[in-house]
Image (cartoon, rainbow, N blue to C red; front, side, top):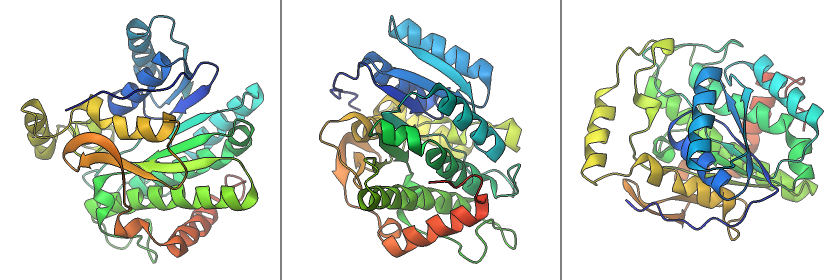
Length: 308
């Protein structure tokens, strides 16, 4: 699969990329650093983050990469990162909300009591983005949100968003990625209405052998899923994308001079291909749902964490 994409000169710009300790996030961070951006890697495991930063520096001599602690499943951790970056006071030009978790084997909750996928993939990034909004406004930033092919169907479980009454891991994952998309759209709409100067768009990586379905002992998955092993095989023979090619839609959305707000990018085919602008999937089209989700999210995280 193609990995060609011309990224403009990003010298002097500050980029924040979540989930860059491995996989697609590390590819995104590497390509942004190679284009001249200074890149902040907020990571849950500092040792993995340092190893990723060292790898980026080895591939991009002179790369400016720093590590920050961030556990998206903890609002306190998100607030600590926001406070640290706010204290530094540097405008942010690029924010790529890429990190995520997928289908734990049973219902699990974040430290704040949210269903793990909804809490990490959406509410963690919701809180981070709103917390960083003053720095994003100062940098007239572009915010790119990484969704998933799982968001092609399903919806928000409005009556039980934390799946406390019944639990379906895949439906809960789809909900979290639909929420990512709806938040991306409403952030852009509010920015245009309020004059924040921030553009927000959306990308998906298609099908590729990322680590979302790898062994994750911390959430109870002791070995890689059968689906991941199949996708790895398909990637090796060129049927699906690679990790490198899967990063291209988000890179296009985040860094291309012609990419705009409220736009959606993905591989030409779901299983791979060059990155192109795409039509929104049905669960992402309703702005009423997007506004309803914002209000729900703000209530869930509370006024301390939902400043905008």
